[in-house]
Amino acid sequence: MEEKKQPVTKITIDPTTGTPTVNLENLKKISIGNILDLKSYKMSVMDGRTMHTMEFKDGGTAEVTYSSTGKLEVFSVEQGYTTIQNTAEHGAAITLNMKGKQ
Image 1 (spheres, rainbow, N blue to C red):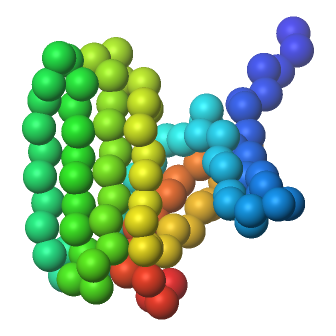
Image 2 (tube, rainbow, N blue to C red):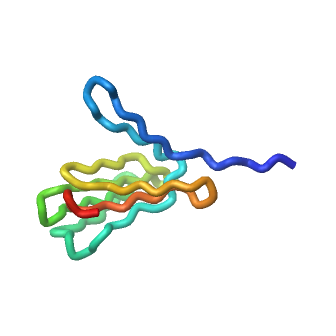
């Protein structure tokens, strides 16, 4: 029996603009590096979609939206810092931080 490999989260950088694109098909976890860095957090549900909106004390923002089936639809970070850890065994995990904090 052949072992099924997990999809791998991939990051690509647009050579013209330098903009990163992340394929999040194996994302298993999104977390906040330091809860004390948050200025505000709001969770809302609209049309079956669950939206998490965060603002950090330094002005950075993040939005994470899931469909009613749990599929990630939106992952957006502005003026923030993210760390992505990825393993074939455990999937990908993203940690959100204020800019300049790792």
